Image (cartoon, one colour):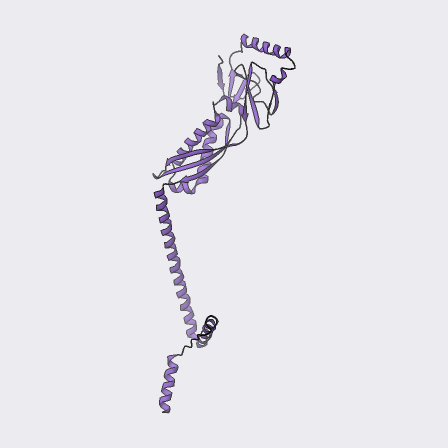
Amino acid sequence: MDHYQKQNNHPNHSGQHSAGGVSYTSTDSPGLCAFILTLISYLLIVATFPFSLCLCIKVVQEYERAVIFRLGRLLKGGAKGPGIFFIVPCIDSYRKVDLRTVSFDVPPQEILSLDSVPVSVEAVIYMRVRDATAAETNVEDYSHSTRLLAATTLRNVLGTRNLAEILSERESISATMQSSLDDATDPWGVKVERVEIKDVRLPVQLQRAMAAEAEAAREARAKVIAAEGEQRASRALKEAAEVINESPAALQLRYLQTLNAISAENNSTIIFPLPIDVLTHMIQRNKEDD
């Protein structure tokens, strides 16, 4: 059985293996049995050369790393790759770790906001493996663990916000979630690159109430704007009337402009206003002539 002692120093060349900022140093030697098995494996490789090369030489892609375990112990030098690397059959086992960015959806989470409003929220997480050795030695399944942690973090963060903040401050919520997830997954060798709030669903009754509230607010603003327009128009008419009152010629010009507009639209209709004072003067003059 292997025994490991945690140390918070940097790895050296005496058998230390670093995983996620924590060094693991073997406190006992591999033992005689391990030495014999290793010797037999090398002898088999030499005896079956060159056919043994098919089992000893492995290849990993540019975006992959291989974490090698020899008789259950993490091999010195950390993860191998990209390219060709050498293993000893029977005593070595390795696991490939993909370093590319992976995205996954957080299932809809039923959350009760700070102002006691039930909402259903979906999110998208983008992550990648930063340290292949830590991802294999510090956690059993880093992908599954990150997914569970993301769902829990989403509920915890949104539970401290009210409905208005959830709807309007998505970028702030995403940044808070990313920081929290990145700190939690750092010992696992996982880097959370981005968090996005995908959808926020409200109950149907609440949607109808919010729609009615928004419609009422728009109607109120429309009435206020119309009233302000009437007020400005009345002030403009008052100023125009004062100007016309000071200059009788302006009234005649305005009359001619009105006739021009009417004749352009209705050619068969002409309105000719006749002042009452003129009619009264003409009547009195006729009486005097009689």
